[in-house]
Each structure stands twice: as C-alpha cells, then as structure tokens.
Length: 61
Image 1 (cartoon, rainbow, N blue to C red):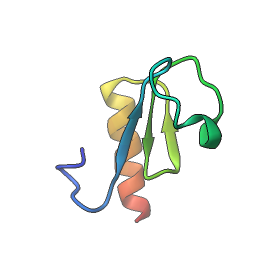
Image 2: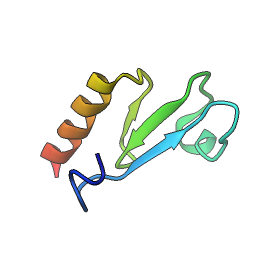
Image 3: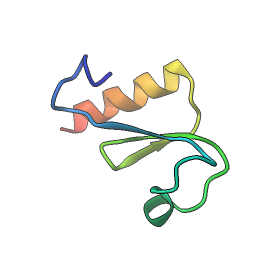
C-alpha cells in the first residue's frame, strides 16, 4: 500500500509478543496490528479491512 500511495501513507506492523515499542502509545494488545499514519489502528488483519483503512487515511490527507 505504501508503494501505491507514495508519500501519503505510512504503515507500521506490530507483532504481538515480538514488538513492544507500541505499548506506550497504544497499550497492551493480544493480537498483531497495523498502524496507519500513527492514527488508525487495525487489528482485523484481512486484506479488505487493511485496504479500506488505507484508502480512508489517504482521503483524509
């Protein structure tokens, strides 16, 4: 998605149990998540939900 929308979206993947940098910002989570533009948190990691969240983030810019 970052390739499709260069400069408009930043996507970070946090894996539960392996990455801990997200805890201060987003709290404890038990599932992996994707954070888009440091605003939108997506925990339902299906292609449709990720695509929808990215497109909404791009439209906000």
